[in-house]
Length: 223
Ligand SMILES: Nc1ncnc2c1ncn2[C@@H]1O[C@H](COP(=O)(O)OP(=O)(O)OP(=O)(O)O)[C@@H](O)[C@H]1O
Image (cartoon, rainbow, N blue to C red):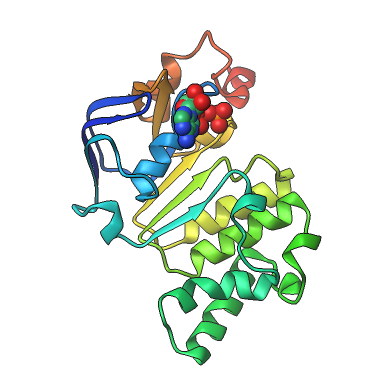
C-alpha cells in the first residue's frame, strides 16, 4: 500500500491518496509534478509538509530501486560491472554474493555482454538498461522508473516491461509518456499542476481523458 497524506512539496499538493496496486503509472503534462512526486515517494527528497508511506514505512526505511529519466546524470561508475555491483556493495554484501547478484541482474535485463564496457561508451538506451539492472540488483521492495522508457526502441521497451513485470517489487511506480504503456498498468495517476486530477484503473482514468492527447493510441484505434 502507498499512502500519501497532506503532501506539499514545491508545486505538489496532494491532500490524501491510498493506492493498493502493484504497477502504478504516473502520467500528465510536462511540468505537472510527476518527477517531483516520484522523488518524494523514493525518499530522494523530504517533503516540505505531509507524509508518504510505502508498505506502512517511510521511504527511507524501504529498499527503493530508482531508474531516472537521464541515466547520464546518475550513473556513478566508469565500468558497467561496477555500476551494477555498486548496489550490493553499498549494502556491504560479501564479494561472491555481490558478483553473483551483479551478473544475475545483467542477465535479467539482457545486458551481460555490456558488463566489461565503459559506461561512457554506451548509448542512451543501454545506459537506461544499466540503471535498471543496478536498481534490480538491490532486490527492491519498490521500483521507481522516471520515464525510463523514453530512450528505448519498442523491443527494448518491451524487455524493460518484462523485467518490471517479473520483478519481486511490491510496487512499481512508473512515470511514462507512453499512454499505451500506462494502459497496461494496474492503476493510473494523472497529474496536473501538482495535483492528482484523476486516479483509478486505466479504464476509469482514460475515460476521463478520452478527448485529450492522453488517450492511449491503441484504445483509439480499437474503438
Ligand atoms: N529542484 C527544483 N527546484 C525548483 N523547482 C523545481 C525543481 N525541480 C522541478 N521543479 C519545478 O517543478 C515543476 C514540476 O517539475 P517535474 O520535473 O516534477 O515535472 P514533470 O511532470 O516530471 O515534468 P516532465 O514531464 O517535463 O519531466 C516544474 O515547473 C519544475 O520547474
